[in-house]
Amino acid sequence: MIDNLESSYDCSHAGNDLKQLQDELQSLQASGEDGQEQQNRLENQIRFIKNKCDIRP
Image 1 (cartoon, one colour):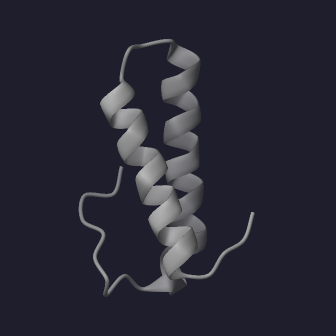
Image 2 (cartoon, rainbow, N blue to C red):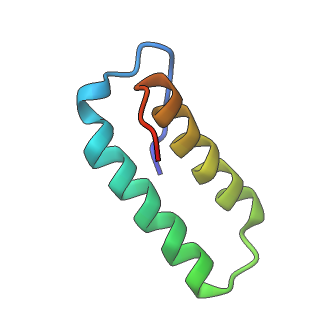
Image 3 (tube, rainbow, N blue to C red):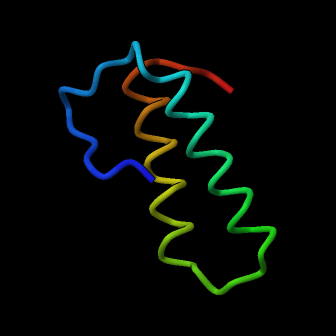
């Protein structure tokens, strides 16, 4: 999980960061743990990067 996402986020890191966040999210979902707060945070970080860097699904 990325510790600090701000409006000054550098989109040149988006590809690697998105892959890392999506991998973490998949691992969390596959584990079946009740980590709803962490899952929400990961999903929010993914949405933030996609919106900030104008990345479409």
